[in-house]
Figure 1 (tube, helix red, strand yellow):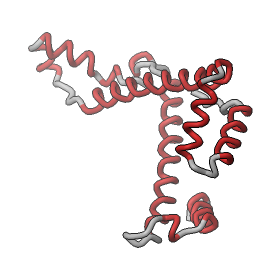
Figure 2 (figure 1 turned 90 degrees about the vertical axis):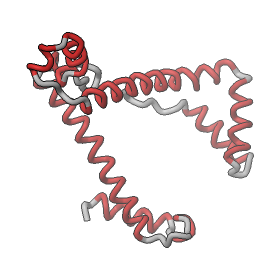
Figure 3 (figure 1 turned 180 degrees about the vertical axis):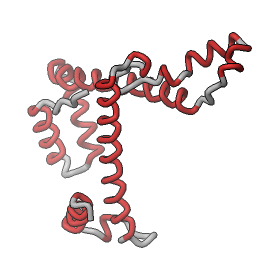
Figure 4 (figure 1 turned 135 degrees about the vertical axis):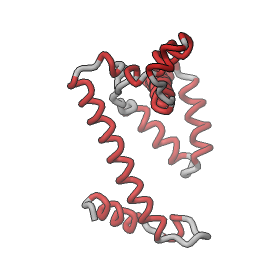
Length: 169
C-alpha cells in the first residue's frame, strides 16, 4: 500500500501548533487534537487516510499471522495425514500451499511472476531492515551504557554513520 503524505495544510497546522507550544509534543498534541476535533472537514481530511492505513495494517497483521502459522506448523507425513481426517483437514489449512504471498494470494494459486513479486518485496524489506540494523549497531558501539544517544552523538555524527552504512562500509 502506498502511504499518502498528510495534507499539506494539516502539516502546516501541526508545525504552527508545535511552535506555539514551544516544542512540547504532549501540549501540541492536545491542542491539535482539540482543534481538528472541532472542525469536521479537517477531521475527515486527517482521519480518512488514517482509517485506510489502519485497516490495511490490520489486514497485513492477519496475513503475517497466517504465514507464521503455516511456516511454523510441522508438516505431517502423507501416511499420517491419510490416517486421520482431522489431521488431513488441519494439514490442508496449514499446508505450505496456503502460504499467503504479498498481496494475499495463496502460493498454490500463484504464477512465477507472483512469487517473484513477493521475493522482491521480502528482499526489499529485509535489506532496508539490515541497513537500519547496521546503522543502529554503529550508533550503539559509540555509546557507554549510562548515556543517551543525544548526550553522546550529534546529528552530524549520526548522519556520517548513516552515510557509512549507505555506502556499504
